[in-house]
Length: 126
Image (cartoon, rainbow, N blue to C red):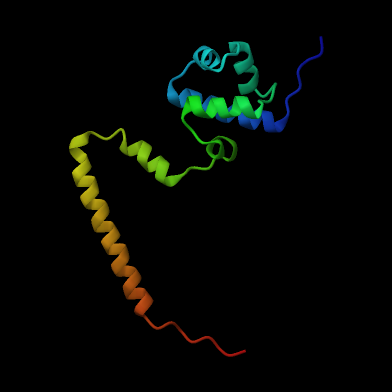
């Protein structure tokens, strides 16, 4: 039997799948069950021995609650990331956080106004 070869793209995607599966606290067996595949298949994907179809990739993203961009390109959607972090905050802190964010937005708006009203250095004609 020929040894399985790894393709770089499969390794990268597999690492990301494992990272997000681990972050979610989900076992390989549970992911396999939800996908309708064997745990061995999930292991082979995570180790980069096999690639995943677009259908499987979509299913994995749905199960893990992440976007394909995030999984494939390691892109963090800052709004989603902030929202995820905020969902773990005790509700008693939400009004304080909202107040602080409002003050920061007001400060940013004031700074933008101040610096947009400041004359810039003239550029030489040329």
